[in-house]
Image (cartoon, rainbow, N blue to C red; front, side, top):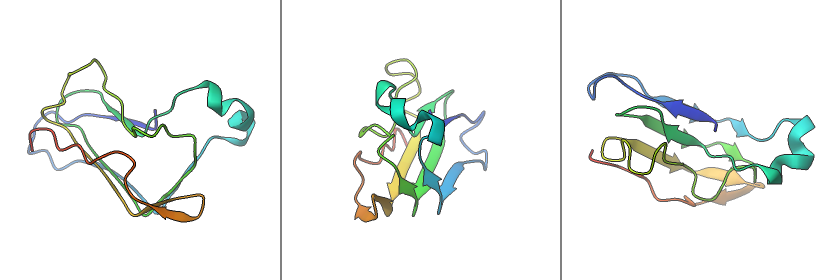
Length: 103
């Protein structure tokens, strides 16, 4: 998991934003990265918010992008979005749809 976010209140002005970054396995994990499933985000509590934009995402991240904490926990209140990221030097669309929950 790259992040696990939460907010106490839906009006809380906090988000996780990953912008112009590189998301990849550490060099010492490169040979075994296929043995583990890795996701960009999972909600830790309600009102989770996370956006990844204009970043390079290595093949270490699962195609779904995000993972539920406990089946339907907090899915009505979360917001996840991916925008103009690249994979292997090529511009990629969102492999997973923006999840807007109840927002």
